[in-house]
Each structure stands twice: as C-alpha cells, then as structure tokens.
Length: 125
Image (cartoon, rainbow, N blue to C red; front, side, top):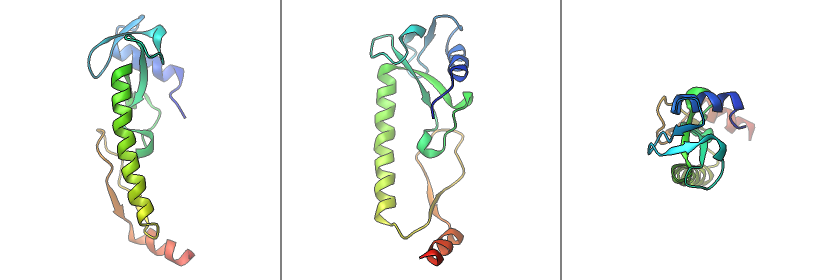
C-alpha cells in the first residue's frame, strides 16, 4: 500500500511552503510538485522513513519528500538490508523469528527469537 494523496500533500507542506516548490529532506535540493515520480533534476518521491518491510505505516510522520537521486540511493540501501534479512531468515526456517517493537528512528532491523512462538511452531509440525 502507498501513501494517500492527503498524506503526501501534508508531507509536501512540511517540506516546503505548501506551494509548487519544496526541498528534499535529505540534501535540501529544490523540487517541483509537478515532477513527482519523474527521473529529472527536480523530480521527487514520497519515501517511508521506517521502511514498509520493517513495519513502517503509511502515516504522515513516516512520510518524507526526497529528490529522485536521494530516493534511489535510500531505496538501494534498504534493498540491501532487506536481502540480508531474507537470507538470514531463509537459512534458519525452523526458528520463530519476530521483530522487536518498531523503532522511532529508522535503524537496521533487530531480530530476536520468541520462545513462545518457537514452541507453537514446533507443535504445528
């Protein structure tokens, strides 16, 4: 699921003056409202601060405006983390792995084994 138009507009307002121009919340580059999703020098995207795969919701506090270059860089970094997490989970399919509570600031995912869920999974086999 993606951000709603209302959420993106509120994040846009926070990143600029609410008009047709705003600034990237990473590099402060100026971007134009009309160029959302376009790979141009003034193009931009709405990005999740806490990524969706880590449980980040589609709410205003989790939405930031990034220029195209910053969004591509952040998405690449998140894809690398997601791949590591997938490989570690696939390497231990018999363990019950759960994510700890959501961080308020984006960080690398932290995982712990929940003994109760592990017992339940073993009983199901």
